[in-house]
Length: 608
Image (cartoon, rainbow, N blue to C red; front, side, top):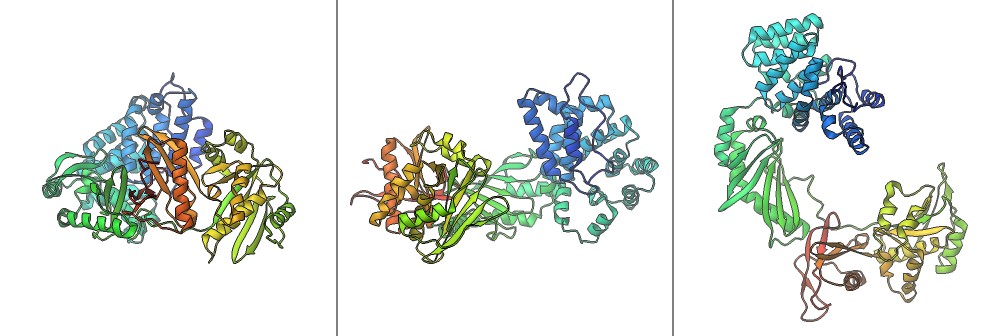
C-alpha cells in the first residue's frame, strides 16, 4: 500500500446529519499538514487522532461510539494506518472501519470501500476484500483507485477479463496513469497478487524498488507476506509444531507447544498468511533447538547479569516477522527477556539492561522561587562554609541562564542557572514522594527557575565526588528564594538537607542527602526502595511486601545503603547478608519493581 493520488484523504460527509462532528476545521487543517506527495507523518497523524478522540470524549463533545461511526474520522484513520504499511496497522484499520460502514454506504463513499478493502487484503482476508472493493466501484464508479484494487482482486480470483475491464475503467478516469498501466501489464503476464502489490505509487521510487535499491524493501516484503496464505506450507508448519490449541490472526497466531513433559505458550507476531511463508526447515530447527535456547538463555542471565537460575522458568516464547526470537523467563513476580537472532545466536542488540550501573555524574536541582541567582554569593558561601576556592566567573548565555564551572581535586564541578521550571512537572511529581515534608508539593509548584548542581568524579573515588556534591548544594541552599532540593527521586526541604550534611565535619558520608529511602504500600504489605546508589555504581535495593513499621523499614534500608557505601561493598545475586552471626538474608538480583532495570531484593528480617 502507498499514498493515494489525491490532494486530501478526506471523505464526503460525517457520520450523519444529527451526529456531532468529531474533526473540526482546525483538526482537518492539522491533519492535511501531515500529508506529503509520496510520504507523510503517519504515526504523528494517528497520535493526533487518538488524542482528539480522548479529548472530545472527556469534554463530552461526542462518545467513543460516535467517533468510531464518523465517516471522515474513519477515512483519516485508515489513511494513516494503511500508509504505515505494516501488518499491525492494517489490522487496526480493519478493526476500526466497520462502525462507519452505514455512513459510508449512505454517502456512496468509494474512498471508504477502497481503504477498507486494502486493510482487509493485507490482513489476508481476500474474499471480504474483494466484496468490499466491488461494492465500492458499484457505489462510486468515478473513484479511480477503487478500480485499481478491484482489478488486482479480480485477477487473483481468476477473472482475467474482469480485471482488465477494471483497468480500462480506471484509465478512463486517469489516462496514462503509471499504476494502472503497470497493473495491466502484470495481469497480462499472469503475476500473483503479492507481485502486483510490490510497488510504490511514485514511478521513480518504484523503479528503485524493482531494481533492488530501496532500503525499505525488506519491510515492504514483510507487509506483503500477510496477504496470501500458502495453505499447504502452513499445514506442514503446524504439523511440525503439533500445537495444543491454535488461535489465528487475532491479530497474531497463538498456541501452546508440547515441551518437556508439559506445554509452553508460543506466539508468532504475524498472521497465518505471513507464517505460511516461513521456511519449513527453519521451523523444524526452532522446535528441535528450543531446549538448547532455553539453556543458553538461562546461562546468559547468570553470566551477564549475575543472576542465579534457581526458581527461573521459561514462561513463553515469541517469533517476530523477521524470525528473531524472544524467550521470556519469570521468577516470582519478575520477568526477563532474552533475545535471539534468526540464526539462533544470542542477539548483540536489544537485550535488556542487566549490567550493573556504571555510576557517573552526581546531580541535583535547587528549586528557586525566581529565575535568578547570585553567583558571587555562591562563591563566598562555598569558601566560607567549606574552604573551597572558586576563582572562575559565571558565564551567561542568550537564554538568560549562566554557568559556573571549576575543578576541585581532579573533579569537575558545575552550577548552572536555568531561568524556567524543571520541565514536564518532574519536580512536582518527585515532591509528592517526600512523606517527611508535607509542604513539598506546594513548595515545588512555586518554583520559577532552578540551579543544576553537578559533579563529575573523573578518576576520583565516587564518595569524594559525593561529598563535594553535597557541599555545593549546601552552598546553593543559601541563595535567596531556595525552595527545595530535587535529588534522588524526591524533593528535600533545604533545612533537612543542610542538617544532614553536618556529619561531613566528622568525615562521615551525609547518607540521607545521598540516598533517599522511598516507601509505598501495595496489597501484600509495605515496600521500600533506595534511590541514589546508582550514582556510586551500585544496584539500588528494594524490600518488598513487609509487615514492618514505616520507621523500621526506613532505618533498615538506610543501614543497608550505609553498609554498601561505607565499605564500598558490591552485593551479588545468591549471596546472604546479616547483622548477626545466625542471620542470613538472601540477596536476589532481578528486574526492579519500583525502579526500571535490575535491583537487589533483600527480605526484611523477622527480628528488626
